Image (cartoon, rainbow over all chains, first blue to last red; front, side, top):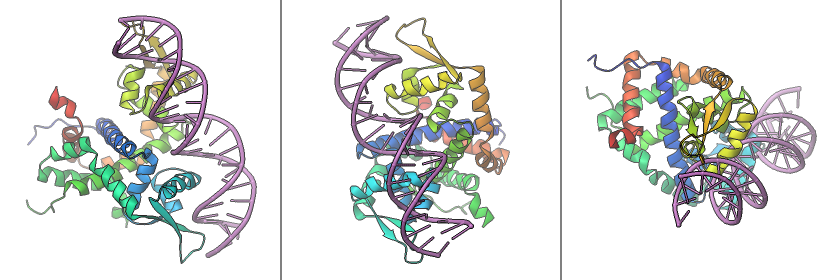
Length: 145
Length: 145
DNA sequence: TATTGTTATACTCTATAACTATA
DNA sequence: TATAGTTATAGAGTATAACAATA
């Protein structure tokens, strides 16, 4: 097996940026169809994995903590999340997805037609391979832990 | 080779969102180090591939055409891009990267340390495989053309 | 003293609608 | 008539700095 041309890191990063743009565009359109901004949608998507404090949310979304106040305010006003003071540290507020928030983010994910179609273009074995490679490349924390 | 567990589309999409968030965060921090917003950086990155009209830029960045005016205005004011009327259609304005703009986007890409380190964690053959899989999954246009 | 979250502020991003110039 | 780009406007995202409550 020597049929594949050698791809350097720059080329791969370039394709990564194109893939990200496609994924992000798909997500943005899907979120807009539920009257959510991309940042609001991303916040719900992070909270699918479980509750998170304001500062953890800010770190995950790569934005300043002060931004999260407004984003979570709007999501809370629509009943998609709720704030809950942490029992162990009264400074901390944990943000939790409501049942309605869970429903909405599942709808959005289901509307990512282009991405879903793209992934289904791969065989089951290819999806396994892609999963393993992404995990190796993008989750350095696991290696360090 | 049956050692890899079967990954379903939802799991893969989940890891994809984590991976792309990592890439996007890396890019956002690198762009900020050059005093550029993520949108301004993305615009420069698209223009690396060659000139593009305002409407093509808007489509690529998944935003309304009216947004591009302000983004390109600010980039032009900093001398990173310039507008040039299309010879074939006088309504169209092509946006072109200046030498300084090319320098800045190259600096930003070089500062994406986490992403570069992650990709270099893979072997050359693994990078080829990742490239091929991403291309299949995210560039449906090629298959349609 | 340091940290979590909020508020105030200024700038940028974003979509919608209305407009001009060109096709 | 339709399309490319701009302008005006209002709401949302963003970082910085200053603040209150808690650790």
